[in-house]
Length: 444
Image (cartoon, rainbow, N blue to C red):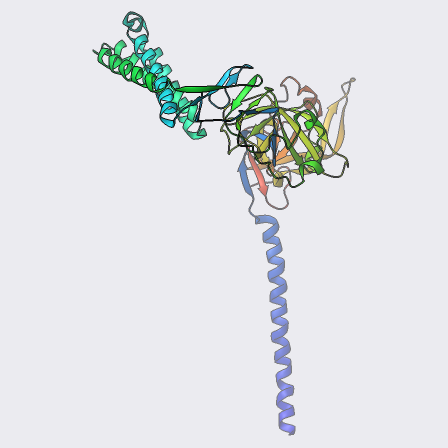
């Protein structure tokens, strides 16, 4: 028993020595790491690129138009529309015919298409004018027609597709004649005229006509929302009004379309309090409706109704564009571009607020040092060193500040007076985005 106690006693100093060595190693490792971290910590740089970005938000809302339903008494037959959706019509103007059969209605549509083709071919028959045309101008018009055709296909606008296709075919025919190709349209014209005459006989069975009850833009589609929101009261809508659950009304059977009576229409949506602070009445914005059209739509903020300054706001946008797609939208998700900014993009991670000392000369020629605190700027790499440069920015988008580079630009001269570093950021500067212990003059 005594021998065991002696052995344990001999081992204790050795264990203590091993533990002390481990602790000493860890302390030395920690000190070494801190020295290395302070002097050799890597710095990540990003190149300052020029871009134009938009301050925008997404929301879902309702299109509100001044709409009048087109009703017809007892319709006996088939309705054949004379107008495309979005086409303008005067009060009393014909919007559709009533035919005795579907064959008669189809015959009218085909006859109109043939008439348009006959007119194009007859215009090509005046070859003197065609020969005199510049082929380059014809090619430019053909390229434009093809671009319009592709845009119409992307927007799924059937009327625009047909029109662009016909224009492209016409320009191709003009080019053939202008380049001296022997193109004879005589037989084609005779065939088309014979077909049209036969179709006109089939289409003669018109039993009635439907007239527009008011002037405006025609649409053959009704969705039951025409009477849900009152156009004349749209500017008074509140967030509560727009957040209610609505159901479209049932459309009567004798309704054959509608007329949008005002060229201007409204898009009403709800935004949060933070977004509402960015908006002002009469402010111009742009709308993107990805499910309706590829083009941006200009709009004006007509009303901002916010009962509680810390709560949601109903924003009423007045739009001035109308076409076949816009004539039929109702509940849509849109992106609203509030304003656009152009400048050099700098990651917000790169921005620092430093104290800068500036040497200035007074009116008597004496130099003195002025200290400026909380100067916003970034560190850029130049000549193997870091240099702190002041930046000026009014907006940040998606984590990047949009910075001005030309402080002598009209309207920006006041910023030049606020510049306390040698220069501000410039295009293609290498900006330090990540790194520790950054300071002016640091060797990198």
